[in-house]
Length: 449
Image 1: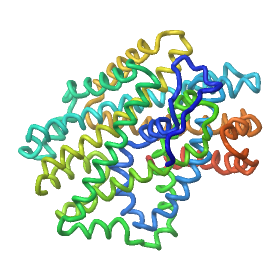
Image 2: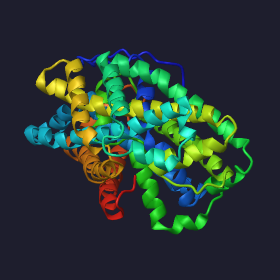
Image 3: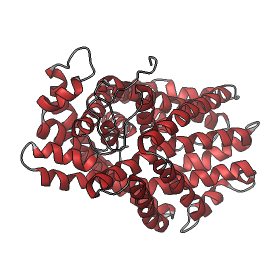
Image 4: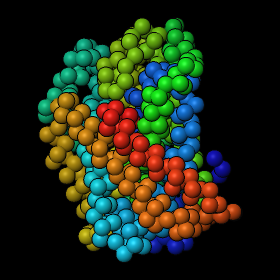
């Protein structure tokens, strides 16, 4: 990435201000995109669906979704000068259906709040496990029993509350300034800590089996539909394309920023984060002969067993869960901000008050779904139905309702050369249908991201 370019905010009159430079914007977007999916799902899926062969469809989809998906959400936010509700109203108002657009905007907005509710529960588990690593109790109990107690009903309220309070406090301290400052610290720290872990894991006896699991290509998997479906789902959800969160970050962007370039940078760094997670996790799992897994069992049961057998394992366990906490809190901030900004703009209330209300709403529901089965069911409903449908609404509203003529003007700002009509064709005739496929296939497969 080139040196920071100061953003003038010309044309950006948002009450919450704007990002101060292009680096801050990209890091904020990377912070939103990098989350649990990069850490507990991508490493296992990479090995499960063909190793290095899986990377071929994954890279294709990450480039496509990054270029025309992320760019569209950033651009409509900047074009409308506001977040989710206002942007949907803006798009549909071009057809004299602004009230319908406003109503539809509540679907992706509730998707962001819904993810935040479940995400804060899981981040509470991360904080509790980090504390256990710091105090040494993580290795004195059976990992399965520890996780079972932590993920029981009302079993982790203090850490759960702490996570929500931290995220809301950072937003209350300042919308764009707070987001930018936090991500400028936490995202580089995340990459640095995972790089240290990946280097340490490289020297473990037996780690080569993990690299074989990850990178020996099984080319026959490219002939299997499931490989392409899972690569598409992983890429789509990894970039945090929700029809909501990235729109609000776009509304804080100055008119002289090259949106497609920023989108590709976000996709690149998100992919690097996923690869680093794979390099830090799977070789270590195989080095100690532990069966690989995905999801919460990988993070809260399998990895503590790995760290317990590793020299200086307690130190690296702390490194790992600090890194996960950093990735999680930056994503949670984006989810909350999508909701805060829309409520603030719609109801004319102070941003700080909306942040507090958003946190209170998340806790009011989240405390009652701390049980692992309940939060799992909640997240399945949100991520299989609500969020993909919201993302589809966003794609359709931008490329079909607002149209290429308008969104193309916004995407061409800040560029030396305007984008050609090919970009709009890809968005309208490839990206939108794929967003529909993500929604339908997610239902048929019971989740693909």
